[in-house]
Each structure stands twice: as structure tokens, then as C-alpha cells.
Image (cartoon, rainbow, N blue to C red; front, top):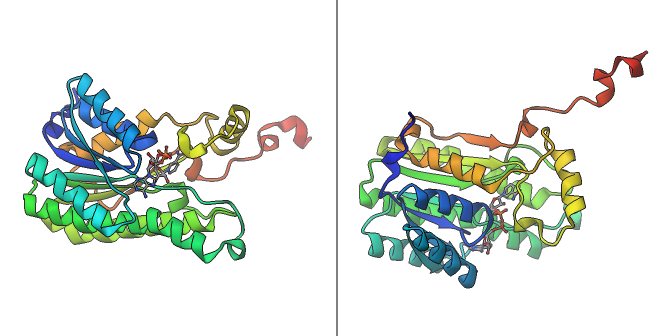
Length: 269
Ligand SMILES: NC(=O)c1ccc[n+]([C@@H]2O[C@H](COP(=O)([O-])OP(=O)(O)OC[C@H]3O[C@@H](n4cnc5c(N)ncnc54)[C@H](O)[C@@H]3O)[C@@H](O)[C@H]2O)c1
């Protein structure tokens, strides 16, 4: 039987963990005995996640931090180390969507806003998080950066988000080489289309239409599926995996879907 007990008592910070994929990762880590720092800008939701984890016997604290601000990120790392005495891992998950439009129509302010959270936020987490993991002399240190399929492929009308997520994959691969000698793995998870509040108020019908268009199995991903992958990457079972940008997308990034007519001989006749 596969044994995930190597994660027990590991200390990990998850940014943007008050909701969505970050919350699912936090729940999965806590269920498996990890000590979790939930970090987010949303204090109410963050505290609720902590309460929920504690009510089921898990260990977690909340730290308010905006990942785009250096002082906040330093504080987040310091509180984690002061509370639990060490840091083993960091999941750089916090991210924001950008408006969809062609590149020349974006404003410079929009570029700065998206890049400051989606790319600079990951850099800051890695900079100060890796420093703390090195000081902790963790034998199983890990960094997981939540990128996107947009970190692997171009996307029309999504230049800002796409460029930041490509940057996250670049940081991940470079850091994997830097820290392999220190036994710290650095990987990126590249989700396809998952049902979280990043979809905002989009009506159900529209979301389902997107699922059919974007996912070969025609369903949106369940955030728990990201939690399971993040758990594996945090465990000692994955110590030989580093520098990987792992897509989790029902095959979306594997290639183009063939139009239905190619598999329907009657149309070809
Ligand atoms: N949901 C998807 O389909 C999908 C697909 C690909 C990639 N992603 C990526 O996954 C990550 C999580 O997305 P999600 O869908 O769970 O989004 P979400 O909006 O449900 O949750 C994001 C969380 O991040 C927090 N946050 C936003 N800005 C922050 C900041 N500056 N500092 C700290 N916290 C901040 C929010 O308060 C929120 O709790 C993001 O990086 C996103 O780009 C999501």
C-alpha cells in the first residue's frame, strides 16, 4: 500500500489558501498530519479554513499576507518559523485572473497588477521561503508553484496571465537546478479548468459550456484532485521529481482535439 506518512509533522505554508485550490491543498495536507500556515488577503475566509481544519483534529494557523508585498511575505515566513520552529515546504498558490483582451489593449497598470501577484508573488515566496527551508535543514524540503496550462501554452486574449504563468514555470525549472544539491524539490502544477471562485459570477450554463470546450472529458476539475497531486509532491515518494511542470487537465495540453467529422466516416463520404 502506498504510504504518505512521510508528510506527517512537515510544516508548510500555502498562499491563497482561504479559498479554491489553495484551500483544497490545505485540507488535504492537514488530513495527512501536516502543520499548515494558511495565508491569504481574505482574513474571514482564512480564519474559517483554520477553524474547519482544527475542528477535524488538524493543526493550522492563519497569517494575513499579500504575496505581492515583500514585507508581508517576510512576515508570513517568520510567523511560520516562530510558531512551528521550522519550515519544510511552501505552496505558492495565490493568483489572480486578468481581463481577456489582445496585448495592445492592456494598460500598463493592468500589467503591473497581474504580474505583481502572479509572478512577483511567486518569486517573493520562493526567495524568503527557500531561505527558511535551508535554515531549517529540512531533509525533505519542497516548493510547489501553482502555474496553469497558461504556463505551458499560448492563449489568445490572455497575454498577461499567460506571460506571468510562463514566468512561474521558468522560475520553477531554474530553482530546481539551484536547490537539488540541498535536497529541496521545486515543481510546478499546471491546472486545466477547475471549478473555483476564480470563475467569479459566471452562470453555471456558461461554465459547463467552457468545460465542454476546454476539457477532453467535458468536466471541470475538482480542487481535491489538485490537493492529491500536491500531497504526493510534498511526500518522500516524490523526492526524485524536481523541475517538472505537471499538467493536471484531463489531457487538454496533450494536443489538439480532432474535429468530430474525422471520426465519423459518413461525413467524409
Ligand atoms: N481554477 C482554475 O481553473 C485554475 C486554472 C489554472 C490555474 N489556476 C491557478 O490556481 C491558483 C488558485 O486559483 P483558484 O482558482 O483557487 O482561485 P480563487 O480565486 O478561488 O482563490 C485564490 C485565493 O488567492 C487569494 N489571493 C488573491 N490575491 C492575493 C494576494 N495578492 N495575496 C494573497 N492571497 C491572494 C484570494 O483571496 C483567494 O482566497 C491561482 O494561481 C490560479 O492562477 C487556477
